[in-house]
Length: 384
Image (cartoon, rainbow, N blue to C red; front, side, top):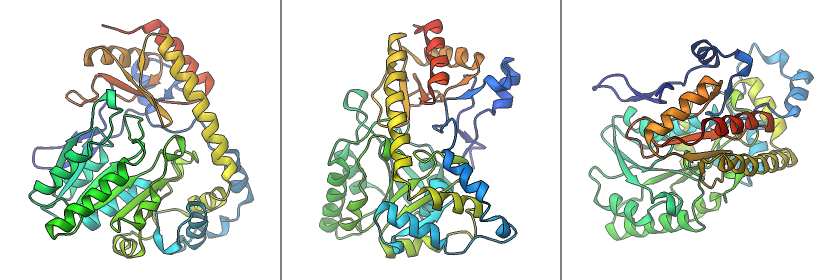
């Protein structure tokens, strides 16, 4: 496969780490494509930030403070986020993207020699962060494509009941990356209720559950209210996707104050820059910005998926800002990936042996860029 996998094992004695995909410059050089024609369909980011970002930057309100560290409490940003998500300020933690929150949660709740559960397939960083803690990854397969890759609640509960060492943390993602699917209504609540019941019956403490809602604005229902009934729930939100400012790295952890206090112990100083804080604080109150962006993406998602299906590609339903496309075999997916790369379009591929190694993940971008990929799909076809 031409594209590097996002997960790499440096040596048999070291935990897995993240390796970034080839850069635009590397792809342009490798395939002889003009750099301005390279389009990233692999990172689930937007073609451009909101126009409001330019207005904030032009205002220059932070220029005099660029030589200083950001406020240690991120007070104005916390206030804006609390209003946006309908939670108390004490329930919020700011991070350099949701990925930093994931890292902090792993450091807080996964001890060396412990274990964490990952329903697979899902975001690779969950297993990576677990292994980096010197802990065991317990993988529980999701249901199949016919069932929308939904969580297998009973299998997760069974794995938690029999796990040795006990499960310290459960990683969840809804809507799920990379399957693009949202859990059926009530599934997450059912799992949390079951975990509470099992912990009570066994006389132990229920595991911490990290619920990653990076894509919830595009087609899911937020389970933030479940923190009231499941005290050990941490929900992450991000401004990388619906707010389209991935490069500024702003994310949030939301949980009961006592959990936030535990996680904050591991928070590094000043990881979110003053520029990021100012832009994020300005964007958060603008509900219309998010509504317009989501409406635009969901409409383009439907058009993009229809165009790919007309080209003969098997496109799965999506509740995110990307689509998952299945091919006849891993070899067929490799052929399509190579053909796209040769045209300057970068798909997300999956390594051999991955449950989705016969698939490609493609970001929904703008009409012009998506039309390029649809035209390529018609040329490439669907290899056997």
